[in-house]
Image 1 (cartoon, each protein chain N blue to C red):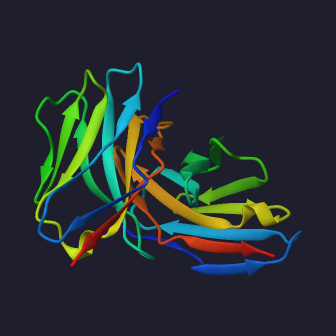
Image 2: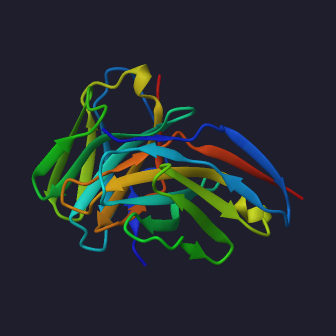
Length: 116
Length: 110
């Protein structure tokens, strides 16, 4: 079974600074996807960024980028130029393939606070 | 835009009541999911469905059942609600690797 570990329960960052959220996972699969989801306070969970395991290039979405280390099974999220709207809970997630019975396995999440 | 809607944002029920949580998606997604979210435990999968009338147990199915009679609708049923089922319930739908979540239902069982 796959496991996803987010070891830091909380982090805080000053507005405009850069912060990195850590995630490690364990799997014996070779074809999988990794995700970061964001859940703002009292709001809907949304996808931040996705990484396909077969791609060596790290995914980037505007101020959000990942550091994907396949051999180390590490998938960290870097948020540059942090904004107050980045305050949220962030979940790292793993999915094996995209078949009918594929499902996401989530980490326990990290609460990120951006200070003005 | 994909929309996943849930019937209630907040719900208060009494112990022993039968509770229905409804979820509807408008993008013709095959896969639908029910999670519960508790502080310090993250999201845990209760049940999922990959087609109409098809369902599979997730990690914590005990005390729950589901129904999927139409592709767009996936219902979570608590046959006899208990206080340990007080939680946030999230519905989601997915096609390929894109999964979308509903706003959640905060259920309190007293």
